[in-house]
Image (cartoon, rainbow, N blue to C red; front, side, top):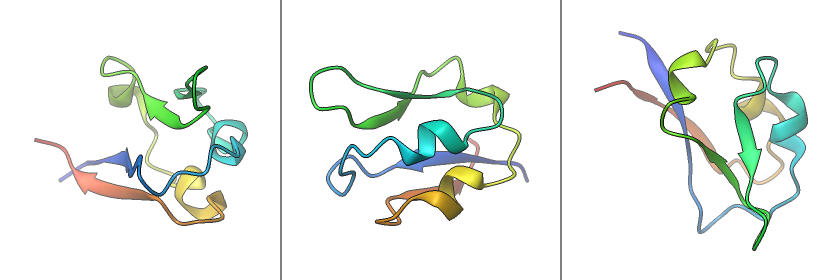
Length: 67
């Protein structure tokens, strides 16, 4: 089964390291709190290389099964 990244908003510190690490440019940062998120239509473009997961300093991004 393929997976998609999921960001725990409560743990995200808004550093945007994951945004820079995403090789397909589908990870974004919100303007108000600068927390990481995926647009619902963009998460399907995830290449599943998990660079965002590996680069997150607080480990708030996890790969979950697509439903």
